[in-house]
Amino acid sequence: MEEIVYFKNLEGETLAGTLHLPAQPAPEGVIFGHCFTCSRHTSILRDTATKLAERGIASLRFDFSGNGQSGGDFINTAYTRHIREMTQAQRFLSDRGISRFGLAGHSMGAAVSILAGSRMETVDGICAFSGRLGGLDPEGGFTSEQISELRETGRVAFQSRGRRLELPGAFFEDAARYDILQTIASLAPPLLIVHGDRDEIIPVWNARAAKARNDRATLEIIAGADHMYGDAALRDKVAALAADWFRKCFDGPR
Image 1: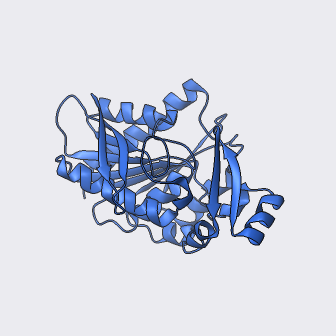
Image 2: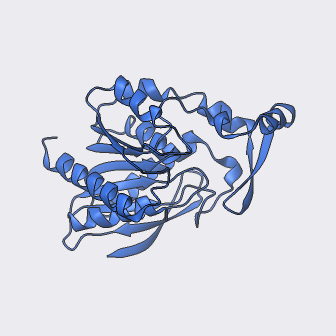
């Protein structure tokens, strides 16, 4: 069963989500974070949530503030803000009877999930789909002309998914606060790293660099998969792999 839900972030903005519930009530739930400028409707998140429900696990896909159907302005996008929003999502699920949690995210959402999970006390597992885990490097996705604009004006404008968007210098300063590789090295919850070997946005070496910093992590390189897991058969395989991994995490000792 799917249900459209809403909850507030710490700024009082309304965040929109889709709650997936299994046929029988369960104490386990996974929270999903989406990619940069995306929404909760990204196919790999939707399909994994469906597989989780089939395995008796609830999940919540939600739109970060300034994205999708959530309130807020995109210009306020920041890792710190989205980490706090994942924490609010955990509290929302707790109020719905969920007592054990997993986190998962795609691309930017993968890094947010790891950073959030490192700060939460009750996380049984974290799954990172196609994350920039070798270093956040937020300037890496912009042209030299855009970086010059950022240096000169304090903000950068760009087009993404049919939207004209802007980011201020504060976004890049916020990202610089986080050492994702160090966080991965000291991460307590089990970590599943999934990456396509044909990822055209974030090179696969990011996944290998993350695995090198945490020998307890599970690394799955998906042959033929691109950044968005556009091949439906491969996406189904990845979704099932992640859902099975979470089932094992929840079934194992705490």
